[in-house]
Image 1 (cartoon, one colour):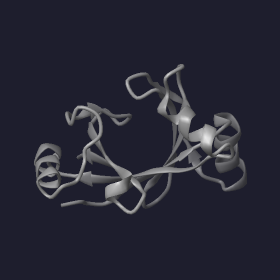
Image 2: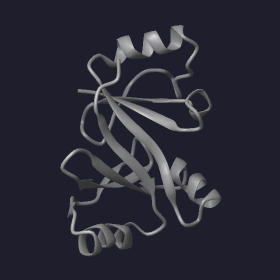
Image 3: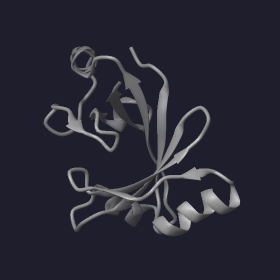
Length: 134
């Protein structure tokens, strides 16, 4: 059901410093910061030959990333995103197998302009999973 790894998301306490580290120290191609108010984050994508890294920074007072950073002040891996061809079929199959979809269960539009869903980390070995329709 899942396709390629789309990105690994890392919550960071300083977005500009993290982007500069990937650009200047690691020599990666770093995209511009983009606010995603529906998700409560500002994101920067790092382009790699085989996938992307998504840097996450809190946007607004109710950002879910702030809670993560409160528990992990240095930042850390927040989630992994896999591509799926049909997000509704994937959701329905996962739910029928007992997986919990976060939120209302309806896809939201993600940072790439495509429908996304998140799966509860307790159902996936402690890892928050994002599914993105391609």
